[in-house]
Each structure stands twice: as structure tokens, then as C-alpha cells.
Amino acid sequence: MKIARTISELKENLKEFNGTIGYVPTMGALHRGHLSLIESSKKDNDFTVVSIFVNPTQFLPDEDFEKYPKNQEADTRICEVAGVDLLFLPSVDEIYKKSETTIKANEKLNSILEGAFRPGHFDGVCRVLNKFFNLIKPNNAYFGKKDAQQIAVVKNMVDSFFLDVKINPCEIVREADGLALSSRNTYLNEEQKLDALKLSRSLLKASNLVKKGETESKQIIASIKETLEPLKVDYVAVVDQNFNEIEKIELGNTIILIAAFVDKTRLIDNIWI
Image (tube, rainbow, N blue to C red; front, side, top):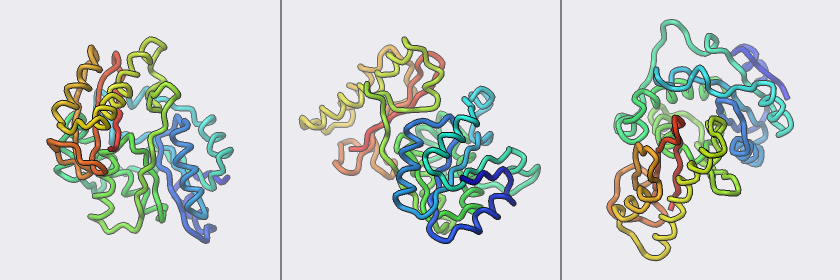
């Protein structure tokens, strides 16, 4: 595995790739969810590039940028064992200039759900991914479905700027008990992890209601909110895959999303129906 820490090193290493490139953007603290993305990339492409970059522009002032879990040595070893061809480990100064042109996320997606509760977050996501896509020029990029709204934002950016990369959503990876894997799970103690299970259990309950014939979104949302008590909930939403709120479940075109706090840790989860 090659490691690049500067843009010039990245470009030099990319010159050696003669074939299709799969790209997995991460912020580190790698877990089995990230590994599933790497595995998908390796299956689909000749070469796989992973970036580890805790992107400051997608964090709000009161969020956890400074304490976001970091273990570069362990992450590097994980990538090596997983068969990554090139690992990109840039510094903030390597990626961002003091004065530069910026872009904004799609206005609609930037104003609802995650966009409403984390204003500016998706602008930062688009800003950094636009840079990485232009630098790496991947044929395919891989994202976990847990960040469903992010996938919609990134697809919109790719379409808007005619970027020649296919965005591949990958299934959520969960613990045996149902908890969706997340780097932020490291913030949780054992008692809090039990509370965090309310998210996946409420979604499982919603899925079972749909299987029994329930199609009314308001009934699904009420059931989820009841299961989530007493957690602080930012939102529970039922949308189609274009993130329009829908009154009834549309099989094959519905995402049910949750954002809630377990103590001070904000978690998101969803199911695609």
C-alpha cells in the first residue's frame, strides 16, 4: 500500500494506476462499516483509494471537531490489511487555502432534516468532496446508506458539476444487537449503548408495521417516537429517495430517518423500504 500525504505525492502515485479507480472517503476511526465500503470498491475496481481527513468545514462551531476520534496508526494498518492500494492522509493546510472559491449544497437538501439542524454541514461536505473528486478522479465512490441525506447531496453535486464519478450507496453495517456502526459510538458507555439501541429497534418496529400493511407515515412516525422515549429527538421523517416528505409509504422508494441524542452524543439511523 502506498501512502500520500501531499497533493503532489497523491498525483504521482495515481499516475501508476492503469485501470478503474474506486474511492472511499472517510474521516478515520475506521470500523467494519468502512471495511464494507473498501470491499465493495475492491470488487468493482482495479484500484482502491481511501482518504482519511477530518474535514473542519463540515463541523458546526459547537460540534466535536477537536475531539473527533483519531487513530491514524490503527487506521493505516486496517487499510493495509484490507488491501487498499493508496491511502491519502492530507493535512488541513494541504486541502484548504486562505482564500478560495467555495460551493454550496443544493438549497432544498441544505434546508431540511440534517441540513436544518446542522446548517452549513453539507456545504462543507460538498466543498471537500469536490476537491477530492477532482484530485483523485475516481470512476466510483462509495458511501454508507446511514448518511442517506449526504448521498443525495453528493449525487446532486456530481450531477450539477458534470463530474465523471458514479456514487454507490452501500448497506448499513450493524452490530449483532442492531446498533448501526458509527465512529461516534466510541463516545458511548455501556449503559448509553443500550439507550442507543432505541434507534434501530424503533426502525425495526416501523419495518414490521409496514410488513403488516401500515402505510400511513404519521402512524409510523408516532410508533418510532414512542419507542425512542425518553431520548431527545431532532427529527423522525418519512421521505422518498428524493427527500420529499410523503404521507404514505412507497415500497422501493421510501427512507425512514431518525436523528436523536444519547446523552450528548447525536446519532442518526435509517431504513430504506
